[in-house]
View 1 (cartoon, protein in one colour):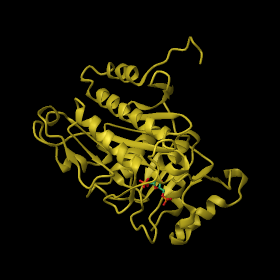
View 2 (spheres, helix red, strand yellow; view 1 turned 90 degrees about the horizontal axis):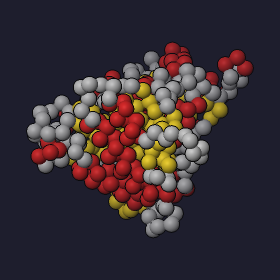
View 3 (spheres, rainbow, N blue to C red; view 1 turned 90 degrees about the vertical axis):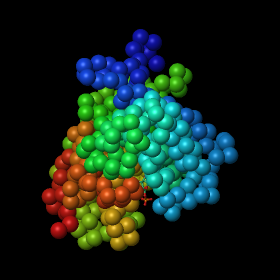
View 4 (tube, rainbow, N blue to C red; view 1 turned 45 degrees about the vertical axis):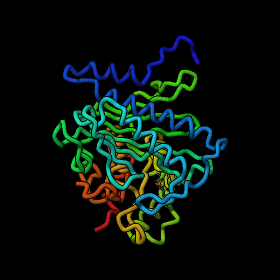
Length: 337
Ligand code: AHM
């Protein structure tokens, strides 16, 4: 590393951003710092997953009937504990838990933010050492301060979000965070244990050459969607087709690539998953907020993901997300009638 290079840590960066607003209280920055601390602890465990006796199934089944891995449980508990001790969090909702948790101590009840997260996304990749991630988002509560937060705080439209981010545990560990000011990426510098600014003002390319979908589901897709996949595979030099197909099966990793290289990622509804597979509150909304703030587009096929009014905590929606021109081309030519 160049010794003269000035490293800017996540903390320093958020404080600098906060100073741009005279009204800002710094509570959002504190929350981001707390979430990044939890992710550093998760990262430590993820890094030694092959060494410690933490690989394999935990034996429990989560609310959606899926087997939880030991690391899912660990990541969930770490995030809950860190946020419970945070100065600025009134409660949380997690993909791993049936219901939201309202922190009922006096300080938390006076906090104005709630946090939602998928503690360890892409967990089927843990055992094969492929990239996994943590996804989070922050909302200002709508319930009365001084009382425990309530379900309506969590069932807000994604467009109300104040900040969202993900941490990818990959060849390096990176935190990507979006606020109304834009999207920035911070790489974990392990020797000092700090996330340092490495990708300033990230933008999603308007065009791309990669489509990302579980192609094994093709037979379960509608005719229109199958026609769109044929379009992606068709030869056409002018439009750079056939597109390359990339699919890790870990939304964080697939969307991180989409954000950096451009492309379209989709998890559509199919005959088996009639509402799609991915969760609105913990996966689709935060990722849509990040991609939109970076200039990309995210849609269910019928409406902007961020405009969907959530009805329940574990609701699923179809998603088509990524480079503006690719997603819009899909919408203009192949969306369902
Ligand atoms: P998980 O919450 O059990 O990890 O499932 C979510 C993951 C996403 O990260 C990924 O995009 C998708 O499931 C992959 O699903 P599939 O294996 O059906 O393609």
